[in-house]
Structures are given as structure tokens and as C-alpha cells.
Image (cartoon, rainbow, N blue to C red; front, side):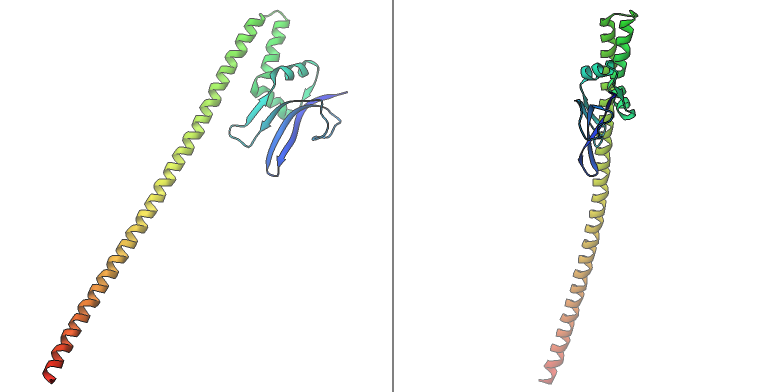
Length: 180
């Protein structure tokens, strides 16, 4: 039986969510599987990956073949590096403690890079929000100035009409007095 480590799609249309599963290669994509070893959500930025490193190492050791995408995910999470380090331990190139130390250092560096990317994304979002608010406030200030100008023109026109009406009333009152 050929065993593969592959993705099983879940989630709704245009919002995929994947389970990382160990399955017989003849089974359907979303069908029967032997074991679920993790999950992958590509909709977040950066993508959210949750994987059981020990179980994936076990299955890789048993000869399970990862698909190309799962191979990239395992590499991203360091599973393939740990398998490589354990191969070095098996060849007596270095000790298990040395392999664990190297893996822990790699994980720490990787987490720092991921955290830096998250900070960069949040800073970009904050600056975009700030620039959007500034542009919005400029537009609202321009609208307020236009409304103010229009009201001043209307009040000046009303004042002008009131003066004309007062002048007409004065003129008509002066015309009416001589007739009497």
C-alpha cells in the first residue's frame, strides 16, 4: 500500500481550509485517511500551519511520500530539517542533543522571521488606515468649506434681498405719503 501525506480540502467556496492527512494514495482526496496530522489555512497572512512534528516524522520514517505542497509545508515548519538532523545522528555525525540544539535554534530564527512579517503587515495596515483617514478628513474639510461658502453666499443674497425689500418699502412708503 502506497501511503501519501497530502491535503484534504474543507471550508466553503472561495475560503479553503485544509487538513494535512496521511492516506492511501488510492483513496479520494477528501475521502478515507489513516491519520490527521495537522491543518493548513492559506487564507490568513502569513498562512496558519498547525502540524504534529513527531507524527509527521514517524510517517516520513515509515516511507510515506508527501505531495509537493505538503513537502513545502513540512519544510516551512522544519520537519524535513529535523528528519535530516536525525539522519546525521543515525550516522554518528553528531549527538542527539546537538541535533535538538540546532533544531531549536532554527525554530527560534524562523519564529522571529514570522513575527517580523506579522509586524510588517500590521504596520502596513496601520499606515494605510492612517492615510485613508487623512484623505477622508481632507475630503470632509473640503465639503465643509464648500457648504460654509454656499451658506455665506445664501446669507449675503438674503441680506441683499432684505436691503432691496427695505429700499422698496421705503420707496413705496415715500410714494404713498404724498398722495395722501
